[in-house]
Each structure stands twice: as structure tokens, then as C-alpha cells.
Length: 236
Image (tube, rainbow, N blue to C red):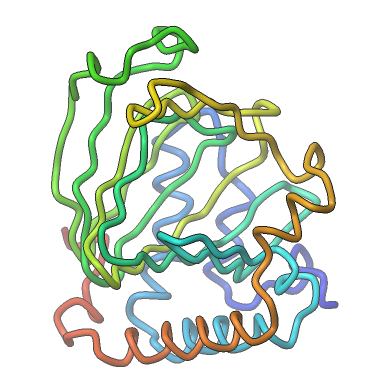
């Protein structure tokens, strides 16, 4: 496997090494060159997507759920930095949650309603999700980008076939909390190191599922309108 730290797949990846993952301004500036390259150079993105099935390390980190699939396109384990691609199914609406790591996200196709509720120091197991009110709400469309600190509590409500790119930084904590209004409860989600082999196997995409997901993503990327394909984060 190629070392992503010494031999990144594109020069735009080099800016990731200088990010301060506790500073959202640094995250946004460091990830913007990569998002610009992926949005404006379709061959770069499709090449990274196609490569996943040929790389056992990356393929083993790809996950599938009823509501979305996640592909890992790049993993710099030495820095704890990954580039992921998310493709959403119809009706996706996640639950209020924070994260184990800070990240930046960029919308390639489709869109979603993004709601932010506050910081996780005011968010716990006894929080009633029905009482949470957004302090920030916006519609993220192709070309939208943002950085989010790991302490932020948010939700995403996505359109069918939405595709987003996400660059995550190193883990700042072992677990994150999800509130489930439907059940009136909550649950904690841990990182891979704390998961059992059965938990990993239940999430991992099979070879056939991965090939099907890659084909679907390639088709959706090819169908993007030229305006969204050429959108520049610097020009927003």
C-alpha cells in the first residue's frame, strides 16, 4: 500500500498536514484546496473512487447502512486524517449528535438541511431531543462547504442521492452521543478500536456491495450539472 503521507494522490492533499484540528478556521482553509480539486477535476474524484476496491485497507473501512454508504478514499493513519465520501438514500434524517473528531464537509451533489443546536457540554444522556431548538439552520447545496468542531451538536436531513465529501481529523475522544427521539433514549457510538469483530462485520460493505456503491457513485458524479461540477469554494 502506498504511504499517503509521503506520496499523496494529489498536491492538494499536502495542505491537510498543516491543519490545527482544534481551530475551525484552520480546518476550513486546509481542506479548501482539496475540495476545489475534487470539485473541479472529475477525473481525480472518479479515480479515487475507483481505486477503493483495489485497496484492501480502504475497502475494509467502507461502511453501509440503510440510509447511507460511506467510502474511505484516503487514509493518513499517521495523522489520523481521512477523506470520506457519503452517498445518501431517500429519506435520510439523522438524530442529534456530536462527533469524536472535528471535520470539514463539501457538498458535491444534491443537498441537505443542516441544523446546529449548540455545544455538547449542554447535551447529555438526560437531554430530551424534542426540546432541542436549532441555533443555526441552513440548506447546504452543491459547492457549500463548512468546518465543524467535534463539540458541536447537529443533524442533517438529506435529499436522495446527495453526495458529500468529508475530511475528518484525529479523534479527540473515544465515543460520541446520539439522542433518539423515536425511542426516547440515547446510545453511545465508539471508534473502530472499541468495536467487536461482529460490529465491524455488520457495517462493512461486502465486495459486491462495494462494487455496486462505486458504480452508483460514478453514475451520480457523471450526472452532475456543469455548474455544480465547476463550483469553486474560493469564489463563493
